[in-house]
Length: 393
Ligand code: ATP
Image (tube, rainbow, N blue to C red; front, side, top):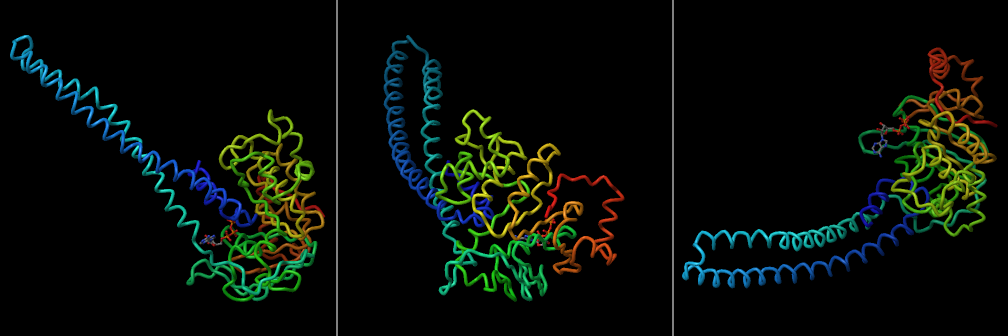
């Protein structure tokens, strides 16, 4: 259980950060870890006691057998060979008992390793609240990048002096080659990282001036292959806004086209999902993730290839849900399928960390630049009917 929680939490660290679930999961982990440590200490004591007991027992029985069989050997009832074979059998018979006590020791050792995981969780993140940070007001959703540069490593810049202004409610699509920095750009809005240079503003204020939780609570994220947790469907949706009522959970699930399939499950909203959301299909997982996003009523929504990899049946239901989710919100959609972004208010063509072109689909096609070339290429090959979310304004 403790290993499940840890691997799930660390594996989904971006989602945990985006949903501000660290406090809740930390409490959960600490509880499980303390419980596991107590159990470990008890099993270690038991293992030591059992190991000692088995050794004493073996020695006693062995002494008894050697004494008795030696007497029998003297009386010629047994041969010395029989005595040796008998002692050997006895040792073999004791072996499983010795193994069991060893296994108990192993369990105790594994429990101690849990302590080391705590050290990882105690690690202080680079991104944290400034002492002067204030709780953010309800956002209108204006997002502005001012000369933003960023790199994961000091010697490798991913975003270079980026400027961008997005109006509240605007639907912006980011397209461009793989590795050009699209996901990195949107992760800076969530403050998963801070820019090395420049600043990002929401409603005209540097996002570092807001308390981290109050910033992230107003941003919803749906990624490709959404991460769900090994908990009930109800809990997974509630993770979008801790403390939400059952009615709110149901409303969010209806918006996400998820209510009907949830009700078809034998345990409905109480269905426990497997680790990382296993036990529901990819499309269903996405719709639960959309419900989790919808329950936040966020003024800013980030969609990172949310329908990539879905079959066309799931695609329709997910697309509908996404349209409802993004209505009225400032939206950032990352997509490799240019058909999916045609209707966006603004399309940004990103390459090597720069916005090389921007405008509506029509404007970019008239420019006849890289976007237009890529669009024609995708249409020509025409095999590209990816199950992508289509912005619809
Ligand atoms: P894709 O379309 O394939 O998702 P992208 O345009 O979204 O790509 P990013 O994911 O932003 O690109 O990655 C930009 C660059 O940063 C890539 O070279 C990538 O390898 C690197 N990168 C991304 N995340 C990290 C990270 N956590 N640590 C180090 N490097 C990273």
